[in-house]
Amino acid sequence: MMTITYPVKKGIYINMTNRCPCACTFCLRQNGDSVYGSDPLWLEREPTIEEVCADIDKWDLKNYEEIVFCGYGEPTERLDDLLEVAKYIKSKSDIKIRINTNGLCDLIHGEKTAHKLKGLIDTVSISLNATNKEDYLKTVRPKFGIDSYEAMLNFTKDCTNYVPNVIMTVVDVVTSPEEQELCRKICESVGATLRIRPYED
Image (cartoon, rainbow, N blue to C red; front, side, top):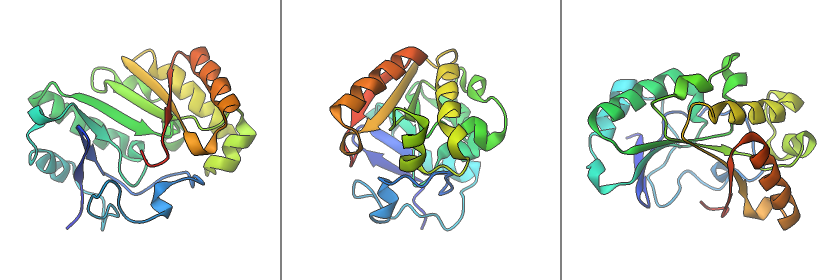
């Protein structure tokens, strides 16, 4: 039985893919096969849009504050499918929808993508995790190489034109207070809000 959706605090999380173009040094996938007491999040195969929507229907969304595209993979690997699921959610509920992403969507798909989120996604949370492209390359280890950092920042800036709430995150255990302050300034420069998140979150 695959885990497609699972509850975390006041949200329902959607696990649509295990694909990811990064190999972050702090990735939770290195520690096991689940988070927050969920069932295993490694997928036997990627669920269809219909399967994802059916799994969402198992939950009474009135009891939750948001739906989050975030599983054991980079959700924007399946951007078009993700947006179809978001349309389905919007058709039945006014619950807020968030994407947790590494911000490399444009590189994954070879085109600008932020405009596609308009009207469907309420919050985009993008992993920053470094103050320069060299440290980013060492920490995040993206398959796209040194240009990934700039692409992530450009995607973030683009998102501020189409998504109401754009957040950038750093993990507390891999950044110093000085780096976190630099990250805050980077966020301000692209119009995003910084969130420093605990390692296990």
